[in-house]
Amino acid sequence: MKIRILLTVFLFSISVSAQNGDIDLLKKINGSYTPNGGKIMLFATNSDNPVSLGLPTGLLVTGLVTKNKKMVWNSAEMYSSAIFNGLITTGVKFAFRRDRPFVTYPNDIVKHTKAGSLSFPSGHTSMAFATATAISLEYPKWYIIAPAYLWASSVGYSRMYLGVHYPTDVLAGAIIGSATSLGTHYLFKYLKKKYTKDEVKI
View (spheres, rainbow, N blue to C red):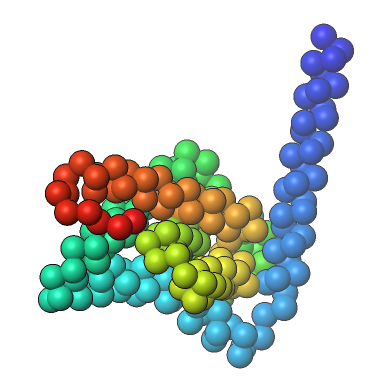
């Protein structure tokens, strides 16, 4: 009985410590806000949907025009990854129902952009990392991978800088987005082998 009590107290202490670290780090990031920095981070935040939807659309159009089957398949994979990621992220949000940091800490965190009601995980970050991972798996070249993840990381950082997400929201979003695209990639790898007669390189 005593062991259970001690274990409960120990786990509670770790949870409180982690939560304190989460908000402390957010305070430093959000507190460094400047008008010029805000413009840059707002641009990063707002680039999420255009890039995440624009890339697969560009691949689809180009693939259809040039009759490039690989590009069409890659487009379908990216669209599917985005859909799966959106469903999983939304499900996790409603499972945890975490309030935004500017709601819980109104005196410490300043909101500099629009945000919904649920915080965990970061939807912008999960979508950005889903896109970065998908394009990196489809075109594994350093000049694709480096800019893709640099952009995804800037989206994640912008969410904290603008005061709408905790660091753990962003971390969870990055993990969910990357994992979703990885799973989708292997699903499409199987589908390509099963339903295409011509060899389609992964």
